[in-house]
Image 1 (cartoon, rainbow over the protein chains, first blue to last red):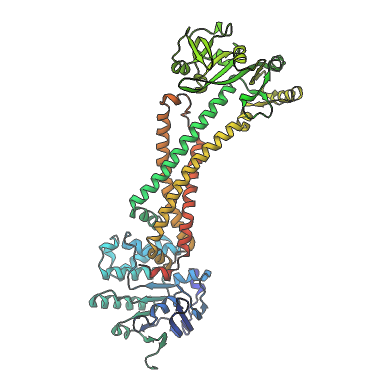
Image 2 (image 1 turned 90 degrees about the horizontal axis):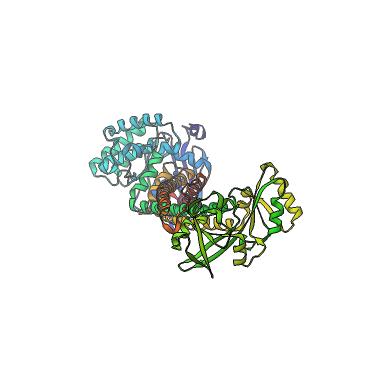
Length: 235
Length: 369
């Protein structure tokens, strides 16, 4: 894929870098990020912890190019992000997203939902199918391929969302409270699966979560409050 | 395949809304097809009157309507004598009314006229035509005037004996009254003139030379070949334009229905569009999905509209008032134009929704409940 040439992995440098990033809403009335500096290295897992409204989701959106900061720069694989630029679409295939709500299309089957990103990327259907089978096997969803989303349990839906996020072999996965809507046991299962896949696929994971138990299992845990990021050992 | 399923799925999600949109386009297409076909049929029949056993028509230059055209009898006689001309027949058009029938077309013709010669004589004989003031009625005219051969019929302010009843393939002629030319000239106060002269040449290739000769000899007259006349006659143009305009208005209404469906389609799945954005859908793909939906609605509407339109045209053939005026032979061009217009209308209806969808910011749309 061209993406690989566009975003050259640089293992010894941060693949994600936010430098002095500011973000506010309502014409500055609601200040969410106040000069955030953040970085994530290749193949590392980073958890963002903090209370609701501290800016975790906003930071993830900025890192994934879904929004742009008021000030500061976001760099992905060394390339600065700019909304509306052509490279942003390539970034969509380079970065996978998992949300608290699965955000699957209910009228489609599990397989069809997972294949959506491959349609966007123009992937060969046969290759896409192979990738789908590989991921659903890893996540234990093979027997559910042709089932509609309404028929799946909460855990299965979130695993489906995980498969969808990984379909285009992204190098970075941004997860916003991926287990937030699941019960404790299912949450644990999904999170273990997430870590396993991230490890197998050699992906950089940045995950926003309230669950400190889960957060501690990541390679690095950072805290967010007052719109800033703190490394726990430095705070 | 998934892309197509995304399109179809959304239409199936709101079936009633989709069906209403399809019905809107269908009725618009049917209306357009019917109106255009009827008016084109009428135009074809009127032009058929003019081109009956002739290739050229001579009439007064710069008149807005053939009813106002005056071609002197002397000119017709002289043209008839030209060596390149096989025959030139004068025809005087007139309109009268009778009780219950506001419009009856009258044709002032000579016994040599193809309309009299080639018609099927149901009653009476053409041998006596133009020997007195007796008139010949088209089959439909005889029906609505309740006339028989030998009886008197009231036509306008005059009363005429019926000489015969004829059947023609042309709706206008079938509903018309044929008078001897001299009688018609007196009746319509147009002594010594006819409305047109229909001309048949010995050799079709001499049409250009004939037209030049008419122009040189009679500067106030013009000769046009039948096709040329059909293209340039302002009444035909007005009729055709009116037909397309009326049909176009119908399609516009259908287009508004599609626009409404597409707008609702976008508004009710803002979050879903956001997800497609997040998974990498480009502006083109998002817009393609919206336009794809409108194209499917338009195509389904056009198909249903064609079926309804065909049935309506078929049924109209049996309406007595329209007998002979509805041309059951649909032109491929008209069908194609109607389908293309339906698709364009659908596309126009999807423009704003597509624009709205591609301008959606994923991060805001994801917060949408």
